[in-house]
Image (tube, rainbow, N blue to C red; front, side, top):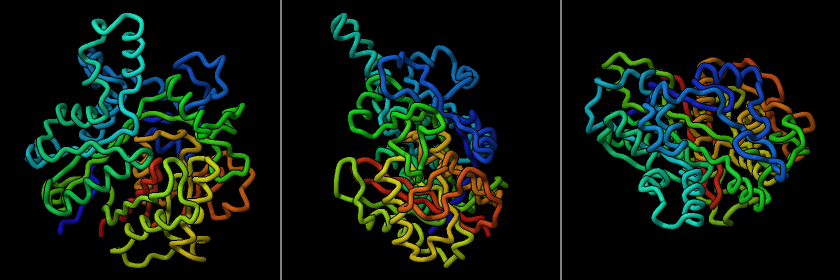
Length: 409
């Protein structure tokens, strides 16, 4: 079976519109969460989100194409453009061996709500013919493939909040087993709108904090829910020999992937954390033992009561007493929860932590929950040697995913 490496990365996030800008701000603990500007929040108890700001999408996508794409697809193509250019893959791979594994947790929800309003107010004849091809969640994968002539295997992934990690992991397996030479993979989300906020709010999942610095506070006992984020993140995965033969820059090697389901509840994780632990164990099964003090985990860390407790138990289930030696953090404290894009941007975080030997912080962690008693890197980045980096994600429906990265030997 083939080895799989990362040769390109792209990002569009609440704390940066490129990988370099994102990483610098993550290390420096910049909070990208602020008052929602996309709609009137005067009557909402949920006032904060992690919005993408100051991005010129026309620098990548022609204006004539923008109107044909929902914002989540626009974000996907924008981040994919950075990753593809970063990798130098175009012109260096057989188009029929070049794939896309890409997902979204919700898809074109702005389009859905807008066209539903048109339908109710003006009737069926006024609904746009672009409604369906803008809204369906697989269309980001389609648009990315069209833009970069990726004619190989194409999969639209949706495992809720684990989507980005699942897309990366399944792309890894596809290359490992010989189905493609390179794959554009990741996730995107653009669902900060009144209906989404109302829906998650009614699920009792969102933070109703009154200040941005208390809105998303993973592992802090004051936490009360997650904050919606948006954006996109993309990796270029490539077969190792293919990358080496073309002289590609290699960021890291993908060395493991685990995917499980709690099969327990539609929104709550299993409090026993056995299946979440099994996803991590699966990702680690082919990796030689690493000193736990040299392991970094970018936790899902949503700032919900149950998620943070479950993840703490997950790491204890897998590592035992060594869990206390791990370096762990949640960058959702800065970006909010980017839903389908979360796993992908957090994989980029893990890779950069590995490459730079820096653990980004969990910001605004001021009152640690006694039950979340691991090293969650409060408030300030830490320089330390890292040999193995993991990214873990949990999603509604019980979806769990973990992806593992190491430096290339």
